[in-house]
Image 1: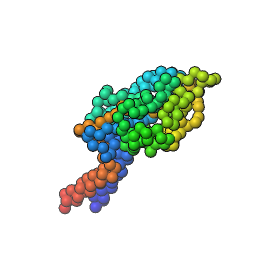
Image 2: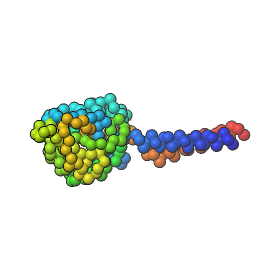
Image 3: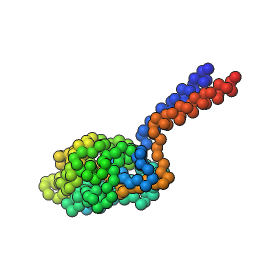
Amino acid sequence: MKLQLGIVCAGVALATLGTSAAQAALVVVPPGLNPGDQYRLVFVTAGTRNATSSDINDYNTFVTNQVTGSALATQLTTAGFNPNTITWKAIGSTSATSAKVNTGTDGTQPDVPIYLIDGNRVANNNADLWDGSIQTNINRTQIDTSKNASVWTGTQAGGSTGSPLGNAIGFPPVANMGATIYTDSRWINDITFLSVSQSLSLYGMSSVLTVPSAAVSVPEPSSLLGFITLGGLMLGGAVRKARK
């Protein structure tokens, strides 16, 4: 009886661990999407850098390098994507390039829903992204951690250039920043300025993705709990029969 009870308890314990793992796992194919559906992913970088460059490509390269070899890249591969074909851009503005233009959320590319890399929707489309609020905090990093931090943006709430990245005016020169703790306009424009020499994270956005025909999704936590608990109960039953 003690052995049987121990096995059942072990099954429940495994279920709890499995559920925690599922909840923490990166989700690169959001629930509810089907093969052929298009969308974008966003995240906040675990690493930081200054905002002294006026070249938007420097920030795009930084964001791309953050993804390379990360847990996010691994999860994309597992889901059926080729990470080398995905372009990552900073959600940031320089004096020459606004965040809307840099990310292609200005109407020049397909208008698709945007998701955090945990499966939660951030915006229904481009207009929703730049309407002054988002649906979910962009606080998940490419290494599968949560980050509450200030973020370099150089951007106003509507996606246009504010006090830009690479700003050389003022003493010291400053740029707009956002914060991952907000879902109102302060996610992109916290109405706070910092010296561009400071090191902060950046937001990253993918190019438009298409759900692969053989996409692999992370099981829902409730489903995983059921599977593992059932396994523990079945194992307990088998041991009970063997003892008779």
